[in-house]
Length: 170
Image (cartoon, rainbow, N blue to C red; front, side, top):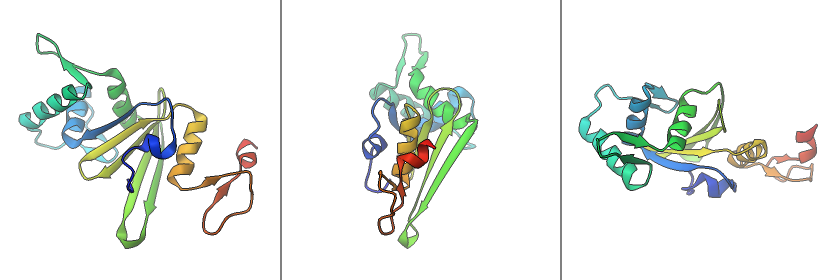
C-alpha cells in the first residue's frame, strides 16, 4: 500500500483482526485448507517442503500456529477464517487504483460467512488481510480506499469526491 503498512491504522478500523502473510505462508494455509487459489494468488505447481517448513516456523514464531507434541500443526482459527473468506466469497468488491507512473494498487473485499475481509498485496510476496467489523466500517473502508471525504458538506472540494451521510442513509 502507498506508504501505509497497516490497513487498520490507515482506515481507522477498531475491533478487527489483521495479518500480513508471505507467499510461503499463503501456500501453507491454502494447502492445509485444500484451496487451490485465492484472488491475487494461486498455489504453485511445485510446492517445496522447505518452503512449507519455513512458513510453519514463521507462523509459529508470530503466534499464528503451534505444533503439538505429536507433530500436529494447529493454525489459529481466525487466520484460517480470514484466508478462507478470501477464497470462498459469495460477494466480492474489487477496488483497483491507478496512479501516475504506472503505479497501481488493488484491494479485494470478500464477503461470505462472517465478517467481510479486506485483502491487499502491498508488495510482491506479501498478502495483507483485515476483517471489517460492521457495515459502517465497510463503508468507511471503501471511502478510505477511494480517498473519499465523508462530510455533511454536499459540495465537492476540488478533485476530491464528497459522500454526504444523508445520501448514504436514503
